[in-house]
Structures are given as structure tokens and as C-alpha cells.
Length: 254
Length: 361
Image 1 (cartoon, rainbow over the protein chains, first blue to last red):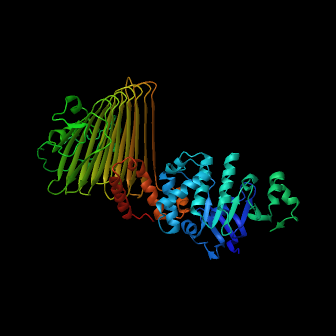
Image 2 (image 1 turned 180 degrees about the vertical axis):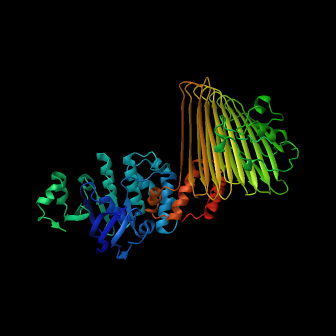
């Protein structure tokens, strides 16, 4: 039985005193996959960053609840430990920390105890294989010298290894070739289950192939302007965002 | 006392205070008795022997700290270790010097005479503490054709002692010398290295990591002098400065006549944990030959907020994230250190030192 995983109530977010999001309301239930679309610069990344707790974004008003618990005032690490995960659009490079060591430390931080080494290594090897990643990447410094595609795969690898309740994917498919998009989609499919939730920002429908999309939101001018079903994606990708204004009555205008 | 220890090969404005070692970091003003030149009596694996006397061509190799320090250590050395390397050895030679109140001064003179094709790792560990204590090490390396010498130098002294570590390495045709340094302790710590890339295709790699806090003064003078064709030098330094510590790094790549098609890179990253810590970096590239490539880079700053946020977004607390970023600076050096228990000891020292700081501030 599904329950409300993420609830955002009247959220207003600013950056450097400029309001970016203005009164966002959103609910994601466990087992659901929501897609967030919208023209460039409308605040999509701001929304997922605010949910993750990026200190650069100021929450002016409103609430973010995860599993019914108010996480609005929590710092990013506390939100991560509560079950939120963000796949970054531009993941940071961390010289001196190998991918494997980083994942082991992160898993230990989330589970509040260090993972069993052999079990961890076995799982890491399997997940890397599933994502067509060379095992040697585990020994390389995190994201240092990785191609754009490898960085995105590494984000999905982290998603699979850390198993959060709520995954926020910020344009994980951008800059990926066709094969890499398929691999990432495979990873998302492997992650998705009835207990967790996904919130995916994308401009490209191909990452969603084979995935059951439950709800699609369109962000415009810092507000969720439209909410609909999967059909909204093909309409936007074929005709652009402008078509929505002409057919406003067809979709739920919020 | 000659004050021009760790002299910048081409001095700059005196007011910058970087031309040579600061007076505060000179050897402590105390009585220095003549040393006994006691030869090394520890275990040596098959393929290495001790030389009774040092050939003049090795004894004359200048160390990076300058001639005064060479003489200061060599003339009155308390201990000597002159190694003649014949084979390719997988097992390192580990030599530890320990200061204490009964033995507050140690001057150790090391030499490595690497015959063609030989291969050896030497680990020098300096530890212990004494009031106005002093450890001075001079290491002279003659890496002959196609030999490989790796010198790992670990300095774990207490906060009352002074450290001086000078190395001179002549690098022959196709030979490779690696110097790996972890400098953590001492009231003052001065290091100087000079690599003389004389043979065609000679290769020099130097990796240094340091952690200075409280009132520690660290001073480095590292020189790669290219005279052979197609020679390569890579000098990388990474460190952390906390408290009211200060550090000077002079890094010189000197392309001399005859070094055509050679390449030299030097870079440094410094993490400042305190606004009162002081860093000075003096990169110098001298060019007396055409068709060479020299590069230097230096990065100085505090924690990168984006990196911290990224690590925190995976569940690490701010303190854990900062700790990870500090330890990361040591990893390129730590990964080259053998044996494993020494690496763990260094990591533990770093963690202990970090605990003394407001990492979560």
C-alpha cells in the first residue's frame, strides 16, 4: 500500500534575494515516478536542490515533508540520512578519494555502521557490471578524469548502492549518447520499487523508455503550471512548451 | 652561522622573505658535538651491501638545502648508511631515527649508489622529540643507467624538535628517482631536494604532503635541474596549514643547455584551515634551452563549498566531509608509502591533528 513519500507545501525559494520558486505544491507517493519538465531557467534544478538542502538556496516559506516528517530545516547530510538522494547535473570531482572508498564511507554514514567489506565489494562489482562500468573506475579518484557519461553513470551507481527512499535526478541524461542513456534507464528501472519514489528532471523522453511514469509536471515562472500524465511528455517533445498554453483546459492548470 | 639555507636559485626581493630559510627555522642554538660516524647495522636484504667509504663523485652531490647543510651533516655525522645496490629488490630498507632527551641531536648521512639496472626503495622515518632537538638528514643518490630508486621520507617528530632533510640525486640515462615525503611534525621542518637529470631519458618524480598547525614553520626548496635530453621532472606538493603555522615552498625547474625535449611540471595545492596561517609559494622556471616544456601551478584556498555539499548530500556530516577532503590531499603520497602499517600510522596522526581543529566550524 502506497503512502505519501514527499510532500511539498507552498514552497518559496530564493537565491541571493531573488525569488526562484514561488508557492510550489507537490506530492509524490511511494512507488511513483514523477517527471519535471519546463523551459530552461524556470527553476527545475532549484526545486530539487531545495529538496536536497543545498545551502545556496534559501527557503523563504513553505514546508518539505519526507515520510510525514518535516525536513525543511534539516541540513543536506541529515536529509540524505533521512532518505533523499540527488543525482547531480554536474557532479563534483574529488581528487584523492576513490569511488570505492567514497561509496563505502557514504554507505556507512547512511546505515550508521561500516558495511561489511566483502559483501560491499561484491555488490559494487555487480552494480558496476550492470551499468557497463569498467571495474577499474572503483579505484579511480571520484569523477576525476571521468567523461560526462561516466560521471552520470557514477551517479546512478551511487543511487543503486545507497538505496535512498527518494531519488531526485537532475538531467541525468544530458550529454549522454544513446547507449549510455539506455544504461542509465536500466539503472533507474533496477532502482524503482513500490517503496521508493523518483523525481526526474529531463528534456528528453528517451530516458523514460520502459519506465512507468505516473505524473508529469511542467514548471513555468517558478510555479508548477501544468500537471498531467505521460502523454504530456510526447506532446511537449513534439510541439514544445508553447502548446500547453493553447490547450490549458485539457491539463490541470494549477 | 650561514643563513642561506634553502636558498632560492635566483633570489627575488628580500622584502618577500622567501629567498632563504627564515632565521626562526635555523638549527637550534646549542652545542653540537662531533659525531661518531656510526655505520648502519640493521638488516639489509640480499643485493645490497654497505660501503665503508663514500666515493667522491657521490659525496660531492649537492643537496637541495645547500652546501652549508651538506657539510653540517656530513662532517659530524652521528650515523652513516652508504648503500651499494646491485640487484632489483622488492623489499624496502627501512631506517628509523628516534630523538629523545638522551639523544637530542642526530645527524644522519645516507648515500645510495645504485648500479645500472638496480631497483630499491628506502624508507627513512624520523620520530621522537626532545627540547631543542634536531634531526638532520643528508641523502645523496647516484642513480645510474636504468636504475630505479624510491626514497620515502616520513617525518613524525614532536613539537619541540627541528628537522632538516636535504637530498641530492644524480639521475643517469633512463634512470628514475622518486622522492615521497610526508612532513607532519617538528617545531620547524626544512626540506630541500635537488635532482640532477644528467642522462638522456632520466625521470624524476617528487610527491610531498605536509600538515602544519599551531606555530609550526615549514620550509621547502625543491630543484629539478635538467641537463640531459628528454628528461622529465614532476614535482607535486599538497598540504594543509592550520593555526598560525607558516610555510614557504620554492620549486625550481631549471632547463640548462643540453636538455632539449625535456619536460618539467610542478604544482602545489594548499588548504588553509585558519585565517592566521601563512602560505608563500615561489615557483621558478629557468630556461637555457630551446624545445623544452615547463609548467607550474599553485592553488590556495579554503574548503570548496560545492565539494562539501556534494559529500554531505551522500550522508557525510560536515565534519566528516572536511576530514575526507583533508585526508584526500595526503592520498597521492600515502598510496605510495610502504609498509601498510606506516601508512596507517600517518593517517592516524593526521586524524588526531584534525581532531584538535574545529573541523565543524
